[in-house]
Length: 169
Image (cartoon, rainbow, N blue to C red; front, side):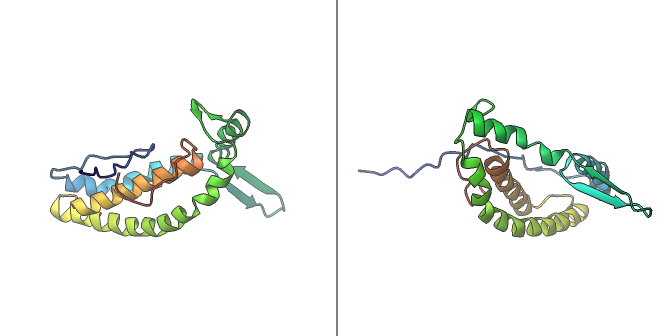
């Protein structure tokens, strides 16, 4: 009697990017570092955060970003209605999910450092060779996939399934 290998069911949060299997434009790659400026400005305006400035006359000005407040609505909906829009989720699990995700945050912290180094090396590789090294592409894609799974589980609360500790799909 033959046994079937266990098939892993796909995780509810999916992420995939097609590998650019072609020569890349070196000039646009060289200047791509400057395109992050407007993106950083937009992210800075919607990210949660508080900025404080004290004037010399003793008054203080405070500004708060809206992004940090956007999770309260879905959290309250889950607690009181036991539903995320169109999804049935455990009522009290969101309070625990943030703690359960701590091991992922620790591993991801070190993976983010590695991704930063890999992206810088990749930038130079594309400048000199015109190609994105496949192994580096797969690593960065895997870290982003892992990050999205943890965010889907602990922050956006779209699933109760604990995310796997792996870069692969």
